[in-house]
Figure 1 (tube, one colour):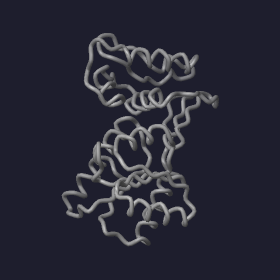
Figure 2 (figure 1 turned 60 degrees about the vertical axis):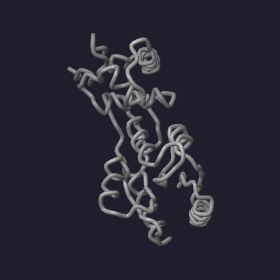
Figure 3 (figure 1 turned 180 degrees about the vertical axis):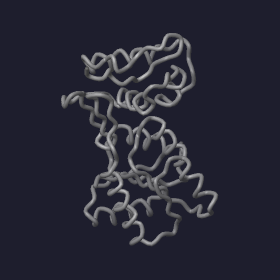
Length: 223
């Protein structure tokens, strides 16, 4: 599997990378939360090992932001915080698993394998002939591959996940761009326009809701 280890302690990071590499995994390693969030959006990892206490942006904030942007890669949080309440915070932030430090290496490797099986079983999103593979970050329309940017994919994924509901422009800015509402910005409109062009004859899957925002809709049934 292709893994990302986010750990700011050099000794712990080196130990994790070495152990996972010896298990046959391909491992990238970063030491701060903001770089990790950018990397998570760019690279389709099979699983992420994420330390809670990180400089710049803590692990919980990274996890929440990644989930809000449509990233569904399995995440294992590693932390010295082992209390039940802390575990609940981690899982509620969007983590798939939680392992307190110090941990047994055998247990860590077993949990990583379990996350890999979970990723393999992750369901695709479908809307008419549109299909989104959230793990591989691949989009097809009637079997034709559609090349989307990371932000376009996050936007499309969020709309399809909420098919039938009008999603406001401010909600999209918050969930996809992780920023507050800015009346002067047309970033949402620009990305929707680009998405529609790339979807071709399936552009009508994204409707404009006047005065609100946008809505993903199922295509009409064949007569």
